[in-house]
Length: 215
Image (cartoon, rainbow, N blue to C red; front, side, top):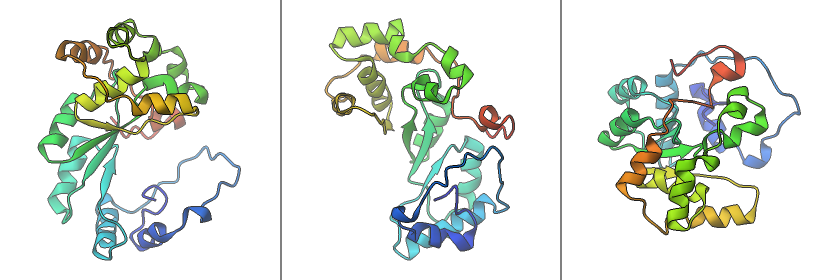
């Protein structure tokens, strides 16, 4: 909703829209159409959704520390969560520390790093070693009798970051649900965090060759 209905007068319409009414026209746009609405205008409109009972909580996605600080100066309702790309190649520790200090929970997407971007044929995802094949991750997985995906999810949750993995197979879904049945040691968490490359895969700069929102 936040991506498509950013103008304040459309926020309520977007929230009320039924999922069944959404559709894909079969085209793949290659251009970016930027909204003229400010983040403050959109946030205040979203706050009105809470006031009218249409939603319970509000959250952010892909905000950096500076953007969060700015929003907190005018927000009447503080964000409940911050969704970020998070995996051992993109640890983002300062951002996690800041959000935690502000009482904002963290939610991770792309917990498996390049794995979910290979099918999009993104060059840097294809050329980056899969985390499932990382010697460090595989060694930790073997020590606990778990799979590399389970280790990656547990690494995140033990660092205080919620995970929302997806899968196309029932077996992987079951494995994902079992990712909290064990604990990594501090040393193991540190070794996995040591894989950090500050490497981001979900980046409009890569998709479109412009809009460096993370720089």
